[in-house]
Length: 282
Ligand SMILES: C[S@@+](CC[C@H](N)C(=O)[O-])C[C@H]1O[C@@H](n2cnc3c(N)ncnc32)[C@H](O)[C@@H]1O
Image (cartoon, rainbow, N blue to C red):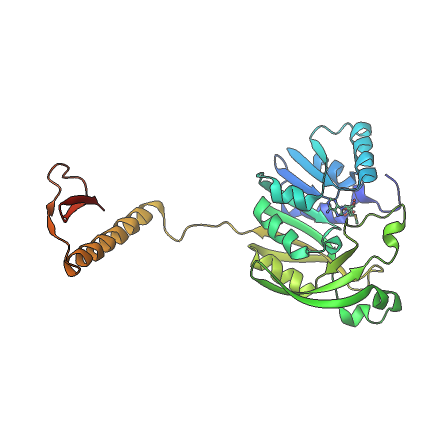
């Protein structure tokens, strides 16, 4: 791996391993960069890792990693993961989204998409906006130029626009594909996860004085959506509602002068009435 970050020995993935047994699970990984986390996820026993990378140079590095380390259960996909998540029908056991949320123009949509495409645990590491911390640094003051209130799928939040200020011209740039990103506050990130159905949110690697802006890692689990009623009660409820509907319909026929004669003799099992000479099946 290039660079100084020891991503093959990353505490964030160790934390994931402590919280979830990854063996046999399907994983979606967003922005693998050079494939270090993808390698670790395979080593941890993932059944399949789908790692989606938009930067073609980074993608080629991922393919080199795959070849050098003989990765067998990692599929690198060259795509914008927002588009990938919007279009795929696949649902994954685990989602790993490290270092990507703060590169999004619409970070709330990313969390909403992850909630749709992940049925189990989510590991998220991100920078977040904190005016009290960032306001002290002139470089950050230059970057954050605008605050906008926004709502996405019922979630109200504030977007803090972060301009890349030439960083995107650097050959080693590994940010998003838009000209700017929008950062969320720490509170909005946490509330957003709950809004879109993640529960049991845990925080680690809390680093308000990270040189690139306040950052933290979050682990959360997708809430299992259970029906309020078990199967037998659902059938009973359906029958009860249907009876109410039938009663309402019969009253309607009586009050509005329809000629209700008799129940359908040809088909005793059918719930039909004769309305002005014609059989109407309810
Ligand atoms: C800051 S790096 C994070 C790398 C690694 N996940 C980590 O935590 O160290 C962000 C990565 O996400 C990729 N990326 C950013 N936006 C993307 C998008 N919309 N679709 C796919 N990849 C994206 C970048 O090209 C880069 O490889």
